[in-house]
Length: 363
Ligand code: ADP
Image (cartoon, rainbow, N blue to C red; front, side, top):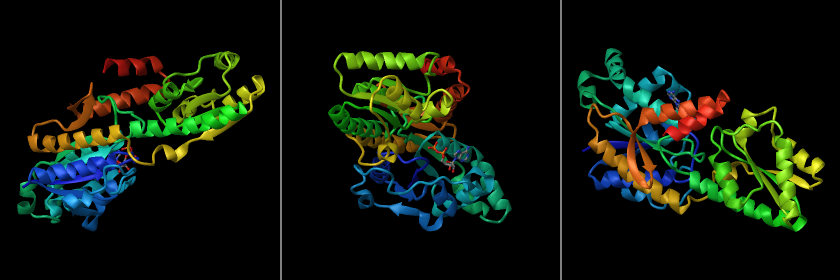
């Protein structure tokens, strides 16, 4: 009887609860025992009551809830080996030898490091008399399965991350609300949306709301962007449009700090075009609220696959991450997905946008 732990980690995303529900119920359906690790890696390091056995009814109502009901945290101690040693001891004490983690690339990198260190962690626990050889013997391998939870849709090797479509829907709804008041007063709004390295939310929101102009981290503003933006907005106004929406991804400001910012865009629209302009930062409303239908189905189908992946795994199987590619739920090698994601983010950071787009296209 396998004992499978489920954890959410990193930034919360709508749909994470659906993932927990699916893993718990599929595990029970398959005759396994399911455990929830509360507060991400913090709970793994703390152990005790942070790791709780879950029954079928414990996840009732989880499917539609936003955020993560089992909590998440940034955990510094798991970044260090002593923290991971304690985590290994806690897992063995609870009899758990498989972990399914729903989080971003940081969380999944940590999970794979934990898996690769596992044999040496067991050795150290025995050496330090924390556990006996007999106690560690049944736990020679730790199975890790990743699920990607992130509102930014910023992981390579999957078409969608859990939470991205809920967040996109929330942004569109918020822009629709802004539209009404913008139209009434014939105003312009600069709307800042989330997206650190990845402009997916801003790009898709721009298309979905018919925004006049967008800024994303992958596309650096070229010389003369000010005139270009003003020309486009003026053209739209000349066509009779009473509202102007410019969407700025948070990451576009971080990356191109000296070039663009919401207030600079606002000043241009106000001073050069004479538009009454306001800035709205959507902030954390983009993360909260119920999961959309897509994230509920994605989390459920992926949770089922994650448990299957645990049960299929042999000692030599590379750690999988559960993906969706062309509408099919599949498994990808976790570390390759993380590596590709990192290369794209690093290329953007180094302002090598051609390479970043090439890496994405190469997928
Ligand atoms: P995300 O998973 O959303 O990318 P973070 O990068 O903040 O979020 O990672 C969440 C947590 O995962 C961290 O607080 C830390 O506990 C753990 N973690 C991240 N990177 C590593 C790493 N390289 N080694 C060990 N643990 C890590």
